Each structure stands twice: as structure tokens, then as C-alpha cells.
Image 1: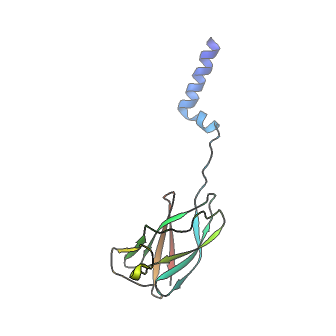
Image 2: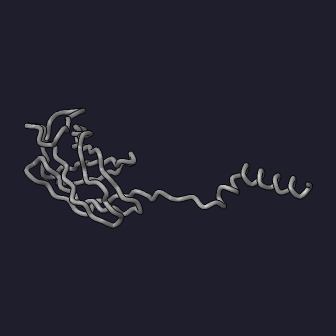
Image 3: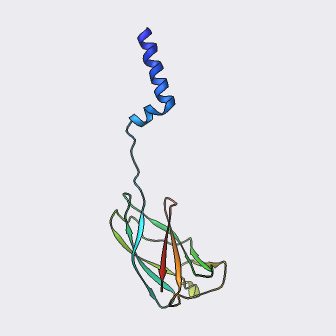
Length: 141
């Protein structure tokens, strides 16, 4: 009976200090990590970025934001971006800011005035994954 009480006390102590949790094996979901390999610009309204998944989990992109130097931002929260980008794979991804005729499929302009990609200017592209992680890339035209 004393042995049972001692073992139970040790188990409760280990659980309460977190030792027991660190001894048990827990599955990992993997880590999302994205980098921009290369990029280019087309027609003043399209940025094409080769995005590499450098993490250990498959990544799906669901939203993007493109901000110019003055803070004007195009966002596309209805975007259907690349899905299932495997670890170490590269996905060519287009970011369109052309709202005329709804070319970008639901992008909107906020926080400033309309713009096109101008040579010599720097642009910040933020992508959001299906796990709600954000990755930011800078591109200079």
C-alpha cells in the first residue's frame, strides 16, 4: 500500500512540474517557412514570385497583400493561391493588383491611392497561409 502511494505521489509530482509531458512522445505538425527565390514584374500590375517552402509542412496560400512605398495596399482575401506546396518545393505565384475589370479576382485597394509597379520602387508582399501564418517578401522593380 505504501509503495502504491509513493508511486502515485511521484506521478502527480512529475505531471504537475511538466516532466511527464516532456517524456511522452507528441506528434509534430511540422513548421511552415517560406522564402522568395526570384521575382519579376509584368505589365505594371503583376508581380510573379517563385516561393520556396523551406519548412517541414505542406503549405497552402489563402490571402495576399501588396503594399507600395507610400502605404497604399492591395489585398486579396478571396484569392485561391497555390495549395499543398510540399517541403523544399518551389511554387510560381502571381500577385495581381489590377482591379479594372476584376482581373485579380477580388482584390481591393485600401489605405491610399491606386498604383502600378514603378521601376526603382520597393514593394512589400505579404502572404497568409491556411494556418494563418504570415510571410513577408520585398521586391524592387
